Amino acid sequence: MASARRKRREELFDIYAANLSKTESGITDTFRCPICLRDFDRTALNLDQAITIGHVFPEAIGGRLYTLECGKCNHNIGTVYDSHRVAEKRYLEWKSGEQGIKRFVRINYENNKVPATLSWKEKWLQMRPVEEKEPKYTEYYNNIVSKHQQQAKLSFSFDIETKYNPTNRDKSLIHSALLMMFYCFGYEYILNPSVGIVRRVISGIETAYQPSQMIAYTDIPSIALPAVAVIRKPSDISSFVVIAPADKFMNKVRAIFLPGLDDLGEERFKHLLELQIPSGTRENIKKVLASTATITNATEFHLDDETQYGFCEKFWQENATDFKPATAI
Image (tube, rainbow, N blue to C red; front, side, top):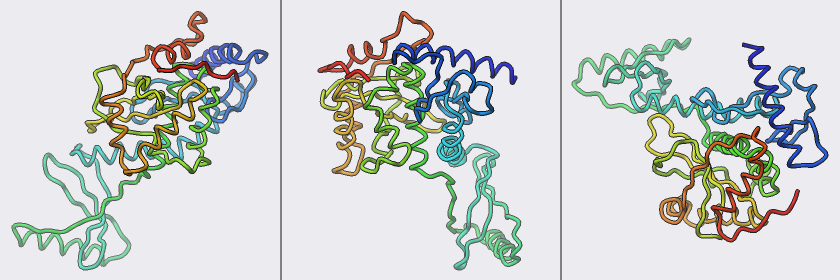
């Protein structure tokens, strides 16, 4: 297993090193992390966790596409952000009635919060006590059970811990979208100057825009997912959009917006984000996706096929309006 993983990293290193050489002349046999832009030569493959396999969408939620990242970015984002995507998935599974999943809750009882677990058994919620050092909680729980046995119906409320932070979850989605662009287009997209705003949002340096502004929920399209698309109209918000696979128990998919390629890429991207600010909702973005945007599914781009270099700019030029070539890096 370890040798197979090592071979996979070496193969990806060769592909991305060749791609980087085409994007930036004079650089050879080098991998550049798509997130932090730190360079690694081939000797880094011999160092533990210097260059790692990075899943485009977290493996724990079913992600199968993978690329390369530096070990630091992969570990930090996995720990700080991707873990919240996993926690959200588990919460939605429990909420939708998935059998056998326990959820920690606190029952509101006589001005106290009594710890317990809830799980589904067929169509019923099953409540169980949680072992606590404080004996009064066991007494409270037994009182609740006793009242339930005496009454046909017993009403009480409880607080559920979702265990995920929406902002961190959104940063995980943006990170996945950026890796999807790297997977499809390599450094041709990743090194475009307009992408800097995305890195700043992920790192928290960018405070003018929130991660949630880069994400919209829309109906599941009739194309294979994940997919890369271009918002074509109106031209003043022309941008890329990555449509993530539908999560289990969700009847919507998430569309993550990213800057376009040309000189106006960041300006148009900011305009797109600002559409959501006045009303505080995503309705404007939903309308863009539903009525004025043309969604174009991107076929998987094989970076090791040298004849296809330049595919990113071609894809953008064919789908965006008022295209202007990007300034050379």
